[in-house]
Length: 314
Image 1 (cartoon, one colour):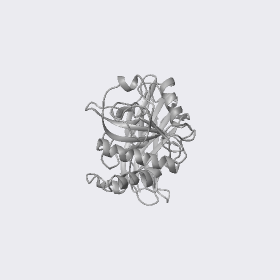
Image 2 (cartoon, helix red, strand yellow; image 1 turned 180 degrees about the vertical axis):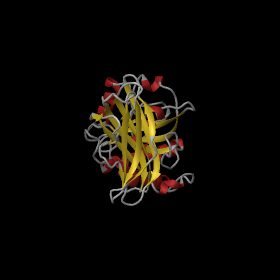
Image 3 (cartoon, rainbow, N blue to C red; image 1 turned 60 degrees about the horizontal axis):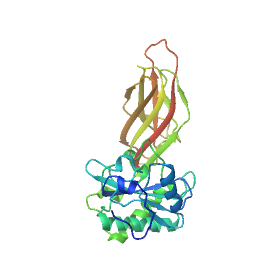
Image 4 (cartoon, rainbow, N blue to C red; image 1 turned 90 degrees about the horizontal axis):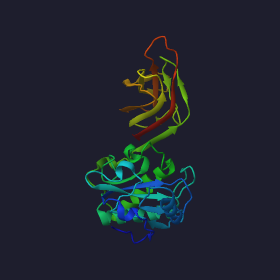
């Protein structure tokens, strides 16, 4: 096990001894949606849940480590530990209750120091993780496989700080050279991460544009990849059709390809993905329609939750 010398050691047991070993290849940053000190975070991991992160960082930059970085921690879903033995190192950071505030200067300094140490200790490459399994640095909402059901963690302000201050700071202090295998990192993508638990009725055979946080899911971008994840109730056998479209400033639009999903018994879980490029002034939206098995059936389907996840480049 490896322990960061700049952190207070608050070792979690039995997790520290019982959980499997990993070879650290990633560093993933989180916001805990609570104004907690590292001590309070440790107490929460110890007393209230079977999940945990490797590190905790308070508003004042104070830092504690709960598990050695060569032992699995459970904050990153599929990145926790992989079949090949690799895994991610995680840090939870104090935030407001909505996880929308920026990191404090003291937090930024501590996160940079941890990131540099991880590069030196475990040879984590100086690049942004290009995929969920790609070695490097990232933040929780960057890749869908890092959370069980989507997340807005950290908020937009912290994502911007990661791109503009934290990751460049790690690179500069670790030697100043990004990994040459990742040329696309000269333009770091923005993350799309929206959720709504509001119910929405889908009348049969009518196209409905979804509002997931906002109707214009992506704007001011050049290219993107996006997925809409829907939870809904409808009669089994009904057909869902979904597509992304580009809304133009003059009121016209470009329609993406239609993707079909079949409704199942109970709740249905449908996903729709598209990647493309957009012109200046265009925005990306998503719409869906529902067709029951019988033309005489006028009962609507009901969306009970919706998530929009993706990356876009400006």
